[in-house]
Image 1 (cartoon, rainbow, N blue to C red):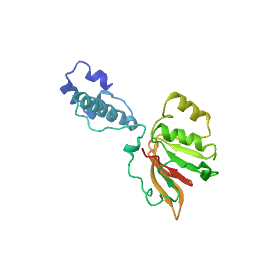
Image 2 (cartoon, rainbow, N blue to C red; image 1 turned 90 degrees about the vertical axis):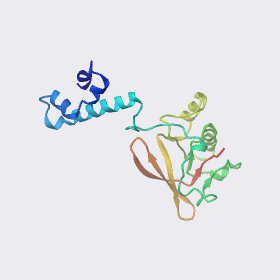
Image 3 (cartoon, rainbow, N blue to C red; image 1 turned 60 degrees about the vertical axis):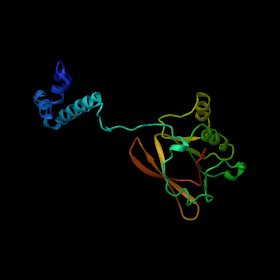
Image 4 (spheres, one colour; image 1 turned 180 degrees about the horizontal axis):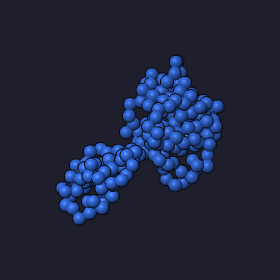
Length: 191
């Protein structure tokens, strides 16, 4: 409806279309559905702001594969370093036998390491901000066929425990919720 109203108008005139104007044009719309007029008017203003290049950050989530240099501050990393948190590859992977291992996606190397870990434990979880399995096609295929569990559109917020790592707090971008997972090891490979 709002596009029909704005059709043929100059941009400045279309920008002046208000929620009330849209509601009047939708005459006869049940009051419970009036939020539609608000959404339409707001969307038109946001589109014009975007066209003019002065759009503020609007509703939405940016998904991207996290590089090690882009890591945000994760609470508990330094506190549990050597107590279940690893920032470098461990040569003797038998150290992780039957452990619940949580790997942060910092690029292809971390994904390949997660695959190696499945030879020592069936409980490898990778968290990534990406919407699907990141990496080149051959690596994505290997991960999909492996025992690696992927948590997409999420990020690690905090490592928790008493003396050693016991669990992690994760933020799910899609649901905009935080939740906890019980784990034994956190791996954040730094370059």
